[in-house]
Amino acid sequence: MPEYLVRRNGFWRFVRRVPKEYAQLDPRGIVQRSTNVRVADDPKAIRARRRVSELNGALEAYWRDLVEGDSAQALLDYDAACKSARKLGLSAPVDDATKRTIAELLDRIEKLSGNRADDRAAVLAVYDAAPRPDITFRQCAKRYIEAHQPGWKNVKHAAQWQSTLQTYAYPVLGSVPVKTIGANGDGTALVMKVLEPIWYSKTETASRVRGRIEAILDWAKARGYRDGENPARWKGHLDKLLPGKSKLAPVKHHAALPYFDIPEFMTKLRAALGTAARALEFTILTAARTSEVLGAKRSEIDFESRMWTIPAERMKARKVHRVPLSKSAIAIINSMPNDSAYLFPGVVKDKPLSNMAMLKTLERMAVRDQAVTHGFRSTFRDWAAENGDYPNELLEMAIAHRIGNKVEAAYRRGDLLKKRHRLMRDWERFCNSSND
Image (tube, rainbow, N blue to C red; front, side, top):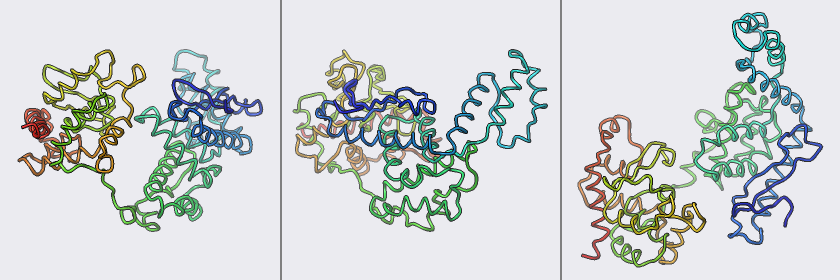
């Protein structure tokens, strides 16, 4: 077994014990990270070893920063003071300690019940005296990701943050104290050093890296680790130095079948066997996103009203979305085994179908070069725009696109469910029209 690599729950996982020389600075004991590589997809751990090498390199660099950086002890002292203060119910520290004297705080503390005032005052003195450490960009990025990861939709998103920062940002910014990264010439020059080599060749990636650097530096400012304007901001700053990505990288639309090919395609699809084929058929009939279908659960289906209610946390717009179900869509649900919480269960117990399963079905049907799963939403939209007197707002609502505030106020009442039921029934009838 390769070093630091273990199998766990069907995935290769990076596991390393914190070396003794770093134990005081990194109290985690054991560091674990998923490689996001399935054992079944990589039985010899070829890809997993490469990923583990990246993760191990990042961890070694992080430990070196802790030891070699001047901020190491200050960061530990500051964290210890914050932890002690939180236990005593004290408020967060302020940047300008002169605004709050110990005498003023003692007067406030004595009005509180619980621990003795002198204990609180002692901790508070340490708390306020603890200097703001010269935290590095890498340390800020780590804390930013830890703070925001619970609100992100999936593990893949966090992995993308880690990977792009490790590849592009850390070699330039990783060990730089964030307090020195301002919008002056030096700060902007550092950000440009990250972006310029990839802005023209990997425009989309570069744009995401820029946005991530901006978010981390804004977080650092909010936490008091840096001040001044953000050198990674686009509008009014970097847009004067770099061309907009729309001028460099034309938008690539998802490959989609022409809507007039759908009836014949649906006939072939219904002849295909397997859960993935049924999931793809259901996706087309509901004009839903792949992730919404893969995560669909029986508890979300109201059979009496023929309604699928997708909770906000699974929606791109983070709003509850209701999907009227046609008779064909209901029939697909009824044809699936009911021994899983998911409508379309995968091979692993209590797990949904893989996000590649529907693409594989398209490959087997020899249309992979003509269409991707997400493209069927465009097919539905084109059909509806050209073959019915459907209001644009109704169609945007059907595919869960954001709608302008004024229009939303007028059209969201009741989600126009009666009209949307009729719309999905018309779409079902068109999909079945090769049988007419």
